[in-house]
Image (cartoon, rainbow over all chains, first blue to last red; front, side, top):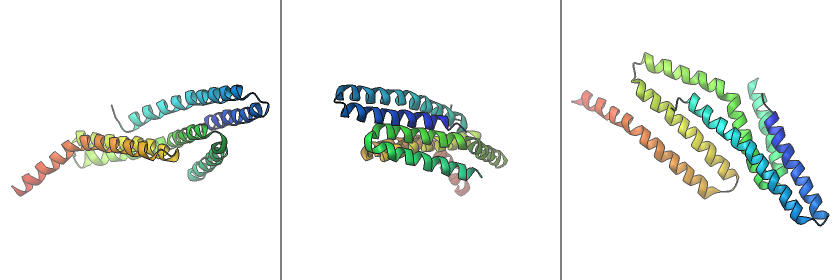
Length: 65
Length: 128
């Protein structure tokens, strides 16, 4: 029951959201963009590994060679 | 009570996705992908059991093992294609989703051709 992945991704999402808006208020909009970009990339890494895991699982379950 | 666990995870993830959607829609989409994968992982053992039952039924009915294999493959391709197109529709990309579905259908048609031929042969044998 690995809920950790769900909480990890949403945690990163929330932190990035808060930091981006905070940086925007502080007038540092470029850093805000950088932070959201890095957040997206980090979550992308997590999700792509999960997707790879899903495809392999589907292969084993449905006996696709 | 597995279904309660599944619904709980789904609702929790849905809330988080909505929360993320206003500010960071791209992260919300990735969160929905991750949730889909997690729910499938939860169900994988039961899907394995269903596949085993199908296999035993196939051997008992003395079906050709190759056909059973292709049926399972078709189910797998249908599942993965549906997973992709649903996620894309959630993200608002209806046209890409329909392309993914069309590709899935083409692949399934390719796999189904030998089975159709086998059916036609058996029917001809019955009639002829």
